[in-house]
Amino acid sequence: MASNDFSKEERVQFDDVLEGFNDALVASKNINTYGTDGTLMERTNDTIWRPQQYISVGGDRVVGSAVNAKNKVQLSVPATIGYQPNDTFELDALEMRDALQEGRLGMASKDYLASRINQDVLAVATLQSTLVVPISTAAGTYDNVALCETIMNEQGVDQSDRYLMLNTRDYNGMAGNLASRSTMQGKPTNAYEKSYVGEVANFETFKLDSGRRIAAKAATGITMDTRASASNYYVPVATRTASTGEVTNVDNRYQTITVSSTTGIAAGDAFTVANLNAVHHINKTDTGQAKTFRVISVPSSTTLVISPPIVSNQGATDVEEAYKNVNVVSTSATAALTFLNLAASGYNVFWRKPAIELLPGRYAVPTGQGAAVMKASTDNGIEVVMTKKFDTQTFKTLFTFDVRYGVVMTGPEQCGILLFNQA
Image (cartoon, rainbow, N blue to C red):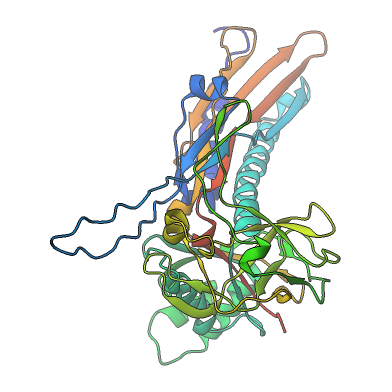
């Protein structure tokens, strides 16, 4: 047997860890996976540009006349493999006498790494989702989830592969309401016995143990200029040419707007703007509902970086027409921002699966260099690396567990948050 090779018990333990790891990946199993090439990622500093969904607007043909060719623009977003969680522990020659000790620590490492992956997916989902559904009461009825379906349908989000992740308190509130419906068969019993909700309003629902929360906003009296002359509207572009002639891709998920003040505003806040209504992304009809936005960052006392950008077609270009997401009902120099996260609340998130991507990464860990190495991949492509090395001077064995990945939201307008108790 080679020096520091794994014993049979350790190999079995690693298999058990991987099996439990697969079971624990709740959030990351319900997003798309995009495989990357290790050599390419190394040469591009672990960043690759992923395409967004095309949106096309045509017109009517008039026989005898030439059709009007529209300019088409392919938008993309940068995706980076930037998460590298690790768990390391060591056991001395006395502790190694208890094989269960090692097994328990291995399972603890699995729990930590699986939790990190889920938390990182949820961090992207909670902070970058732009569809916002505030509910004034506690969680409890079908209508709450139906509003999430409504906002997606109204804005033209494809009706397939939709998922809703509820924090435990809100999920159990839903289950409690369902359990009280004695006129229904099957589901109320499951809800009562197992706090199980299942599929609701075209969403597959899942319970999270996440403690992620949104803070109450502290801003009042904030306004912005929605007139075309204020240039607070956005024109999407695929690339930008620098003064040096270098052409680079552009991330069109964000926009910097000018507001009267940013006092009390923080990243994560959700808001609407007076007389800016959401439109259906394909047919451009006005939904009659205010468009919701998220604050991504607060760079100065009068500027906000927001998502999605305000594509109102006030510049009247083909690309604005195609990617228009807002109808300006009327303009104002002092259009009021109305904040939606009025009270601190636990996050609930919903999305369409292709709108968030997981990018599994790889480590090129050498074998035969004094440390034993084992690798295996989870169901969604995440490679788990386990290493073991014994130090003859200290009589200690060092164990490491590692994973590497990236998470990117390619479609912020296909993802949302559901907030309760926003009275």
